[in-house]
Amino acid sequence: MTGASRGIGAAIARGLAEDGWPVGVNYRSDRDGAEAVVASITEAGGQAVALAADVADPAAADELFGALEAEFDCPVLVLVNNAGISRDDLTPSLGDEEWSAVIETDLTGAFRMTRRALKPMLRARRGRIVNVSSVVGLRANPGQANYAAAKAGLIALSRTAAVEVARRGITVNAVAPGWIDTDMTASVSRDLLDAVPARRAGTPEEVAACVRFLASDAASYVTGAVLSVDGGLAA
Image (cartoon, rainbow, N blue to C red; front, side):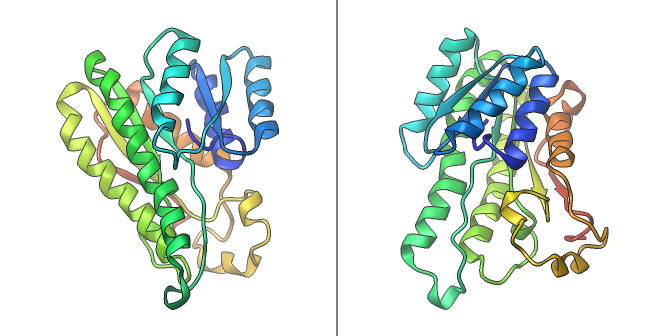
């Protein structure tokens, strides 16, 4: 899975390992974090490997999948696209670089990973793809036009790919987290929680539980869905 060195990604990686999946823990710069996730998985009896790559690099998908296929000697049948960045600013002052960087990482990177994942999945007639979108792909948040566009695009990508491959035993779904208690939200005013009907932040493990379900055999008839994990924020 991409973007798995901390927060939501780390929780998903550990959860999938608990379910018996060998896990590729992708990271861009946080090597220590990725290796800590791998260590926690292997200490619990699971299989994992840390893999460095920037998903915005067009070559990253082939490199990551090739490394995983060689490491575990099997096709990759579950892909979780979690890697993402933000470059916030109001639309009138949002620069081209800030727009492009977010779109390339959060949306185009996920597209390339999905395209590469589908090749062995189609041959196996089995597979699960889960794209980690965001509540801002469903509900406006000022200052995040680039991030919102990327996350809404992930939802559209998920739905379209889902109908294209459904008859081959492959599901493609999205989860849309809201306010989740991670390092990324630590500096944000807690007053914003007043907008959340549940009146609390979610945990990375609550998002991971939803991804684990969508990756499981129990979700074989769930595809093209968007599962909000936001305490009612987008309701």
